[in-house]
Length: 409
Image (cartoon, rainbow, N blue to C red; front, side, top):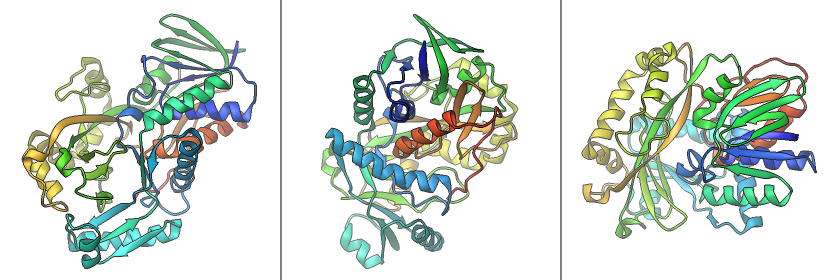
């Protein structure tokens, strides 16, 4: 009998396992991951950015966790000799409307205690000669890292402290009983006193498998991006982001330096037809059926069809995609958009069509299901893990609920 079983070997699941070992030294902890490798999905396909937390409304949980997570991630990297770089990020305004939105972001950054510098058009040109804009905010503490390497170091720490990690074994059944939870995998049965499910793209299915009543489903959104050639890898010394549109749930196409010396451009945010199909054109009948039979998906689609059409158009046309990039980096050409790749974001959608941008937990006496861990979950993973453990061990009642809604940028 294990004390705690964690489903999911992404960065949030591993952070929960580490936090449990910190909080309850000597506890028997096991992590179950259906893939042969850890961090195979969202964690291993994200942009590798250590976010500063400029976007989130002051005083909210997301803002607090992001700031704490950025420092905790960097400290973990120092302790484990994982390469990272605090290169900074420029939020670039390319129109008068974006300049107005930039001013609102400046106020938010001040309230959140974010270290930043406002750049005029001349200062922007001097700082980044290849970047065009009317002005920018330079966020000094933004960094880059390889989160797959972070996960490997987390896994080593978990095992070194006596924990177990089982890979390549898919969960097939979950039964909660009076003494704990029984988890049937494709090879072994695990008995544990408590279960934490951090299943990401499969989180709704794991919750339903465990008998939870949920009123949301996971809808996959593909984030498609390109690698720039070596000749353009140093087109900028920092990360370059557009000023986000508050009416849209995603941050927009941006230039991202990678810790291995490369440069990517993207991602967009287009509806996916396979939760774990990364190749363009991937289609899963099971995943499409899950969306098509969920009324919330159609309500969401009706609310967001204009942005959906735009994203599909940018996905279908590399020229349109390039045009978005050239707003702030005019020297890019169509031949620079190389090696197309994609990540997939698990977007929880409620039955009324609302996109969930906050933490969503479902909980019983012996189970806690992380149904939604909002971006930037990788940056915030270490304090998220501790928060989840606090919630698991300090819970006073048996209700299922969500953490109160937090404002989005």
